[in-house]
Structure formats: C-alpha cells, structure tokens
Image (tube, rainbow, N blue to C red):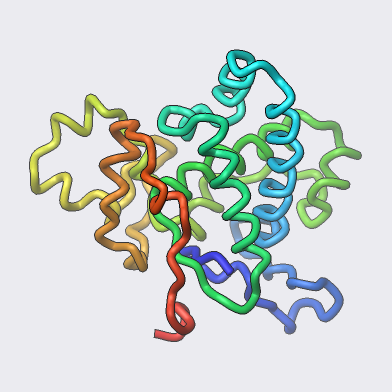
Length: 224
C-alpha cells in the first residue's frame, strides 16, 4: 500500500457497501474521483504505455516519454521510469505492507495522474462516465485532489527559482506547498519530512537505484 497524505484505502461503509474500495462522501466542493481507482487506472495504463515504448527506437521513445511525463522525464529515462512504474503498481496492489514514497515517486505520479485528467477532460460524456462514473461527467478538480492526497508539490519548482532561494526558504520546502497550481493549505507532516530527494528532483538529477525503490514503513502511518 502506498502512503499518501490521506489514506486511499479507506472504505466509507456509511456511504456504500457495494463498491470494493468505497466511494468517498462528497462535500461542498462537489464530486471527486475515487482516489484508489483514479491512481490505479493511471498506473495500470502506464504498463501498456511502457510496453509500447519498448518496441520503439530509443530516440522515438525518448520523445514520447517527454509528452507523457513532462516533469519526471527531466530526471528519468524511459528505462528508469519503467522501473519506477512497475514498483509503484506492485506496491499499490500489495495490501499487506505500507510503502513510503519519495519526491521522485510523487513527481512521477503527478505526471501520470494529470495525463489521465487531460484524457478525461477532452473526452465526451460517455467516455467520462465510463472512465470515472462517480463524477457523472463533471470536471475533475485536480487542485482539490492534490490538496487532499499529496503532501506537497514542491518538486515542481523551477531550478532557477530554487537556486535563488535562501537557506531558510529551502528548509521550508516540502513542509508547505509551493505549487504553481494555486495556494493550498499547509499539509500535514509527511512521513518523509526531510526527503533529500526533493533537491535532486528539482535539479533534474537521475535517481540512484535506491531512490527508485520504495521504503517499507513499519506499522500503520495513519494510526499515529
């Protein structure tokens, strides 16, 4: 299981007893995608994508990966992102162990999720309802989703802006949101509050092999 700011494996039995992973109760901000299904659909679709990329010439695969992963492709080749994709999906489906992600993983997830949001947004009513029936064809509020489930999106900061930050400002990264998507509330402390991969992602440094792996989190992170 993957650790997000909010538990995506939570089942709201008070709302439904039929959906396998529950449909979260809506609020004044309107309907929202079921987090579990939203993330699973993105990760599952990526497996088909990477199989297709492996059949292409390397130069063409490099160009395609930039289209689908505009942020993650800055630090990861098709081969690196393919390994990350496999590990994320495997950990996502493992309901026995909690896995902690770093900024490389969250950057990858950001790209794959927003790609699905774009597909949904440009689809017709039937396509939308088949892809995410809980939304009834209404637009996805991706900012709201990020606010609820991502600890921060500081990994999106431009390297030039990052280099101009003071030491004090850099220390705050990952603890408050610096997304260009709008001002979001201060997130809860992340399990990887002092994630050293943040600076590496911002500066487009390829992940070391251990950075591609997911760290096992002892116990349940939501019972602290």
